[in-house]
Amino acid sequence: MESLSKCKNKKFLIINPFGIGDVLFSTPLTRNIKETFPESKIFYLCNRRVEPALRGNPLLNGVFVYERDEFEEVKKQSKILWLKKLWNLISEVKKEKIDIAIDLSLNSQFGFFAKLAAIKERVGYNYKNRGRFLTKKIKLESYENKHIIEYYLELAKLLGFESKHKEMELFVSKSQTDKAVEFLKRNGVGPDDLLIAVSPCGGASWGADSYRKHWPRKKFAQVSDMLINKHKAKIILTASNNERAAIEEIEGLMHHKPIKAVGLALMDYAALLGQSKILIANDGGPVHIAVSLGIKTVSIFGPVDELVYGPYPQDIKKHFVIKKDLSCRPCYKNFRLSACSYSMKCLETISVDEVVEAVSILGNI
Image (tube, rainbow, N blue to C red; front, side, top):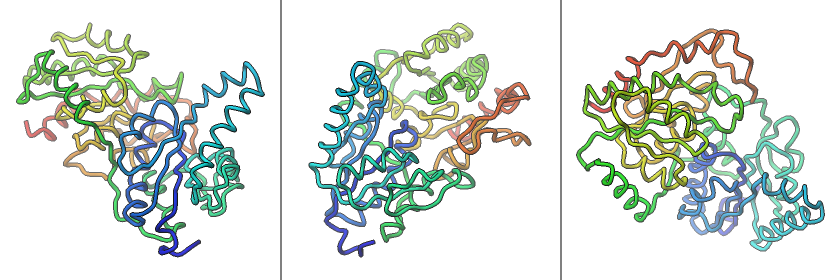
């Protein structure tokens, strides 16, 4: 690999086709590249859903979108049109004359994509020999025993430098913040109110297994009521459009009326979360958005290892992870979710009082 002095004017492409959590996990890497090579240009290849979070990142010089579903739809119509669409994207990347690709996909097709885009240096992890198109790679069996952010930052060593920054970043614009403040004002929330965001769903990337990450809805309702009764908190329930039924169920179980924010655009949601004092959520993207914005979190982890996928950096004064250390946990290992033979005991045995106490401690209330 070239010396640091020869890398200073280089163009980088970070490839990450995953969800908002994984993309936020890569922001420390972006920051370290930019501060090590201030004159460099950094581009990003992501999916359609997370694009808005990257468009506002001042460290990036451009964002390319690869949305698998869109390509598959075109492929159903015509393989020729699919090839044309793919080649147009490759050509778009190629025009930038990028020097170094950092492939976080663990998938050989993106390494091949980078090669077709004439990117000479291609670094990443070699998972199940899928790194055959990479020029520099680290063998990987699984993400375990340390956070994904630390895995991503290991790739900096392949570029010849050490990482100094480990904090995630998300940039919310003033107009998005103003919009969130106005929404809260319309719903009776003032600047001095204790606003607690509650995200009771998440895990959409798991598809039909997403419920395996979910603490019982009735307990989210009980926690919300207790925080209103005990601390006069204002509770805002948040979810995607596909999760509307869950929010309505929780609202129906509550004795007090919460504020609801369903189906917000990604950055509108981030701006709203940025006005909250604390987020209560299942393991998932909302937790990492909150951490990136400096918002305190109480997160509930079941089958997933919080040391690998949890809030980072770990700081019990800001981020409280509630989980049960059972012999069967974590059951999500090697990128596979095992069948549960214990009726989701890891989540079911987490009590309402534990969550309320965590919120009280974090909020100094």
